[in-house]
Structures are given as structure tokens and as C-alpha cells.
Length: 128
Image (cartoon, rainbow, N blue to C red; front, side, top):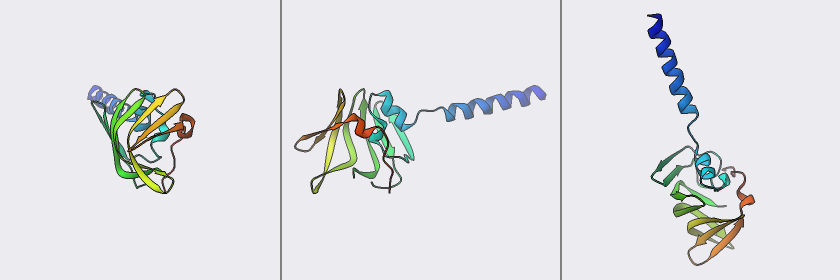
């Protein structure tokens, strides 16, 4: 009986440890050479399936984030981005790709590419 109790305790502890050490959405970005600040603080959940990354946020956010955002993640880039818009002058524009080139992040908008320093995304912004 004591051995069964010990085995059950070890099993539960192992499961809890595995759950607590699962990578976060921010870890997935960093593992793909992208800054964690591409996502705001407060990610509720994410799904990563074959490179397709889907993220659930608590609210919409200057980048504007819809409640569900995502894209296809590869080392140094996010493609097929959905659920995110950036304010350029007075318009909110969607973009479909983020590409890291050295110390720059290029956001590919509908009609142009806007470069940002990677350092601008070192920290995740807070949601309002």
C-alpha cells in the first residue's frame, strides 16, 4: 500500500512539473529568433501545430490585437499573420508578415514594409 501511495505521489509530481515547464507563447517566439515583445503581456493560451501559432489574448490592444491572433512561425519570421494591426499615421493597417533581418523587424503591410528595431520589442506591452 505504501509503495502504491509513493508511486501515485511521484506520478502526480511528475505531471505537475511537466505542466509547469511547458514553454509559453513568449518562449516559442524566442526559440524562433523573434522578440517576446511581439505579443502583449497576458497571453491566455496558445496552440502551436506544425508551425501554425494561434494566440488568445484577454482584450484588443497601439498595435491593435484582436482577441485571437496568430500566424505561421519559422525561425526569424511570422507569416500569414492575422488579428494584428499597426497604426501608421492616422490609419490602422493590417500586416501579413514579420521578418527579422539582423537587428531590425520588418512588418510587411498591405502596400509597404515598415522597419522597427528589435529592441523596441524587448518587452511585452501591457494591455489596457
